[in-house]
Length: 106
Image (cartoon, rainbow, N blue to C red; front, side, top):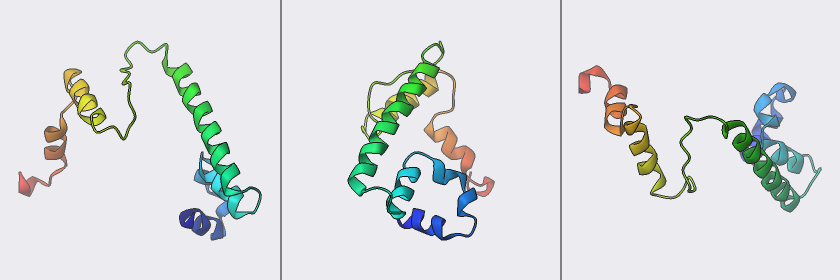
C-alpha cells in the first residue's frame, strides 16, 4: 500500500499506467475510500481468476507451450522448469549465471 500511496501522490499519477494493473487498481480504490480492504481482496481474487482463464484460452491452442501442474512457490517447480528449458535447448542456470558475470570474474 505504501508503494501505491507514493505513486498516487505524484502529480502525474493519472498517467501512470501500472496503477491500472491488477492489484494496483484495487489498492487505489482502497486509498481513495471507494472500497474496503476485504472487498478489494475479493475483487482482486476474482479479477486474477478471470485473467488466468484468459491466458489459458489464449495459450491453449499453442502446440509448443510446456504446462507445469504446480504453483510458483512450490520448491520443485523451478528445478522442473529449468530441466525442461535445458531439454528444449535453452541455457541452464549455470550457463545463465556465467553469462551475467563480468568478464573479469570468468
